[in-house]
Length: 392
Image 1 (cartoon, rainbow, N blue to C red):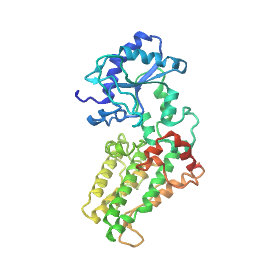
Image 2 (spheres, rainbow, N blue to C red):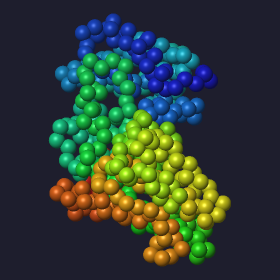
Image 3 (spheres, one colour):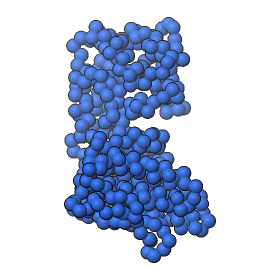
Image 4 (cartoon, rainbow, N blue to C red):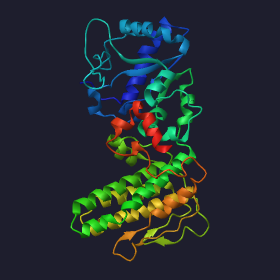
């Protein structure tokens, strides 16, 4: 098999070196945008050798003006008749969609006949309806945002255009990140979910339920990771790439912003965020503590690492400036031998910011795309209206 090349690089070179000259020659007056966007690990930069087994290779989306949509088949026929069979050792030809596998297509080497390329030709409106169920981004309501698949939002804003005469990336810009009220609701929800189980890692372990303790630890760890995505204004991918994305998560050097005098004290052995500390250093600390909690050899280490990670997430919350400063420390849970920071205080502080918004009286359940294993439901636009009703 050909030497591995990142899919984005392969597709960009394929378009610029092979496909664009064909378009320039046969359709010199055509205005279009072309790039890699939407589905695929290659769009997010997570692809590797294993990714090559399906829906991967020299490929791109070609977006046309609505008035040029009638040319779609003609353009595809031109590609089929003029594209090479191989590019950089990879097949340009692909199988027909497999009806038994969600329409998946596989690279299929041929040496004669017409090429069936992995090229999608659409108007941008058609593409948006296919990906998120709506084409008009100008009047989105709060509940619309929570009905969208977070992974699909990420796949849109992570896209790359090789040529963008139709200003596709500008049109996507309203989806850059959640509006303030939606972000506040999701932050409140994640702190509330943590609070609902914050005492159970120790309690289960002391009752001899090691399995339950580990499972709850992992659930809280995931919610802390989701808070990190939210505080850094970054969409999280679905479960396959969630940990990978968290390991690469960056705040771009953003520094703390705390009220005077708030940065000096310690929180149960965890230094509170200093005014010169960056969010990225906090992220590094949270990663280390979560890893320690998930692989802890003892209950004491598991609980200590997890509560310290919560304290660092609390410091990130206060540095975000989204609410008034929330005081916290690592302390016992109502006098019991259980360590907490009382995560509910952060849920309550964020809930105060929801008063007067569409989320004021909505239960703090977060979004369905933040629940692992539900992607078949939450990513399917057919169910979008039903999901939306949860928040109305």
